[in-house]
Length: 169
Image 1 (tube, rainbow, N blue to C red):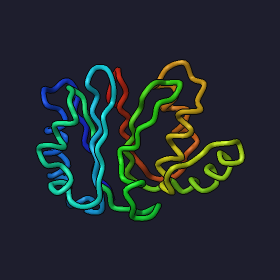
Image 2: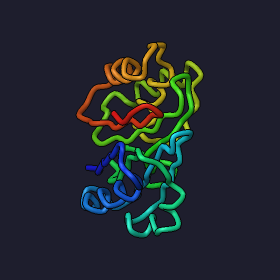
Image 3: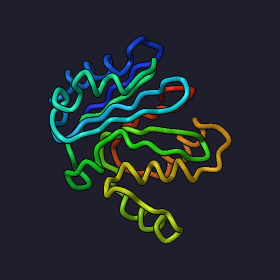
Image 4: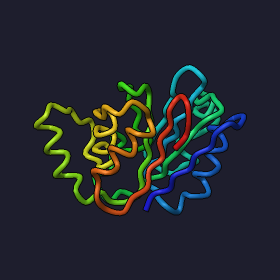
């Protein structure tokens, strides 16, 4: 039970994402985060607590751009720690990508163990990072194909939002 909100092609997108997360606060009160694309690079801010506590004006000012997504967390997998707050952001063969996730990936432990044996290094104990590693390792030529390929390996009930330099999926 998390809240995910995304907005594209809007002035002050991070502020609009903040307002969306504020409205979704009932979906998770543990942590929150926003990732924004400024036309050149991604910016992310995450923290523990309620949306209004994490995003005063000075923090929102560090999230420029016309594309943003955010997440408010109620943990069902992984401990309650800022490392597990979302969005998670990486730079990989597909460029910079941020991910938000809601739901449960029931085969996450099995896939994580496989990825670790193959050399993956995890920074969190969240099942969301498993999906991110699958995406980063995909050899698909396009971002949308890499998303489909990575999500196809997962079982459970879940939804994702991905933000890249080109789009919000």
